[in-house]
Length: 307
Image 1 (tube, one colour):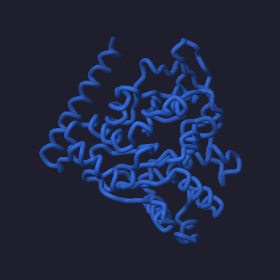
Image 2 (tube, helix red, strand yellow):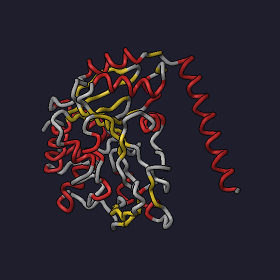
Image 3 (cartoon, helix red, strand yellow):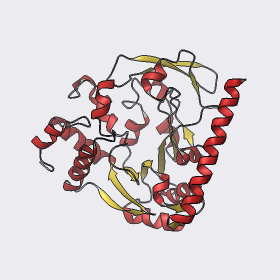
Image 4 (cartoon, helix red, strand yellow):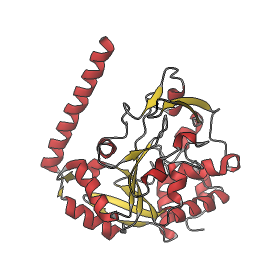
């Protein structure tokens, strides 16, 4: 009973904080319409038939008239009926992969578990036609004509991001692009496709021993899914750590120097777009030169941008 009350209070506090944040945005931030978002996405380079893997900061866009649903609708209009939209809708009850692996009674269920990824992914989950991959930590949700192909059998993949995962399948599509709305080059899970594809050939060991986590499908069959937590000692070195602005800027400058990264405004946010296959190939090339998303400042100095 006490646990239930705490959960309810937490939900009420979360709702109140969001309401207050929305009021502040409405009174202080620039207003942007769904139509404006669509036009700006198209100006950035989003085209009909594109498959877009989105990472975003909703509040960075300003006050969006219509809220998260308007952002989703703008994306749908931009890619059209032949396109796809992919969003990370992860559920990590332990806060991290490592801590989630320690939860002995945890079993992911698409029917009851939402996502910890914020308002836009939450709204996306509630959008008509969206399908979600079955995975105990890194579930991905997709709207579009290839939604089934992109989401099916994620729980059968030998690793989170590698062969058979939504990331690997996404990268095979002809118009696959990674889109960052109001974010740096740090929090981008597409990086991990290279790690899982290269496996032991990746320039440095990044994983702890594998654990098995459970998930349950819509037929009530329980699956044991292999998940590898990341080495804790590398967390502060990785590109998504707040202290690694140097590595985030290096990656951005590298992709610009190679002519791969498109930039432009969407709402009030500075945004970027890059072709997934070009992105992967450049990450592979960088790894061959000793530069990864864990590169030290000294390693960055040894390899000039655009080398």
